[in-house]
Length: 137
Image (cartoon, rainbow, N blue to C red; front, side):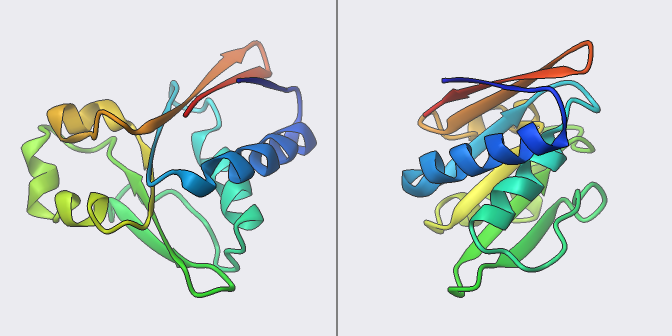
């Protein structure tokens, strides 16, 4: 699936479409260059899923936990600062991924072989201010 977002309103609409698609997903890998809009898209997806907490990049904490209005847990990871995939084992990445809860992962390439092969993928490409968002379930 390809979605195009030329502004924040269209990014919000993309978040709405993707939230519906992710209802059967457990692990979602978000790929894209720095500043492509990964965290912004995750913020809109979480809002659609009923998260009322502030959604922000967990760059320094590596993982944020959010609760939806239905008391469902969503984990949001930013793995940019990992130097090796093994560092993820130190904070229990496998337990999060095996929890059955929705795990939204920025910079999934830093997980190496620990990223589940059946993870859904969302890739964002910035084409001069226009975001192309590719979703692969």
